[in-house]
Image: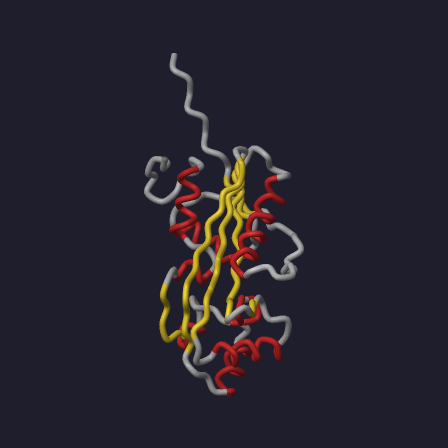
Amino acid sequence: MSPRTPPPPMLWLASASPRRRELLAQIGVAHEVAPADIDETRLPAESPSDYVLRLAREKALRVSSHRPRSAVLAADTAVVLGEEVYGKPQHREHGLAMLACLAGRAHQVLTAVALATPGGVASALSESTVRLRAMSEEERVAYWETGEPQDKAGGYAIQGLGAVFVECLRGSFSGVVGLPLYETAQLLRAAGVPCGLGLPRTR
């Protein structure tokens, strides 16, 4: 009698973001949610890419420490202009100032994704460039008052009302939303987690 194939590991998403849940569902990945609570302070002299990669890995490992036999997926997104990293706005004035800085200029959106499994942790980085059109003060205020920018890195949502300000995008749309699906699928397939079309794992 041939041995049974072990079941794929249960996938936990180390994030409470409904956008990341929707993106995983889009590619047919079953999962449960277990948000990770970590210190997200950027380290001195830490580059933006190292910063998001570290946070994604720390989130995955934090949840994995309580579920060592499962697979844990985590991600972190930052909007970057020069060396300035824009996270979620702390308050109204902060959010309006972010939009003023980003308007009429191109910026980078970095999203790191990490997958922790019993075999270790693997990670990948998605880098995209977004250019927002110029915005009047009235537009920035009106957008803020919709409530949409208040929990978004950089103070805007490309998948929502903020799309009207996006002049061009070079890179990954899903990465800008918060979970780069190409990189995520590669990590999941390599770990044997069912994903998308159900193709066999990569070598």
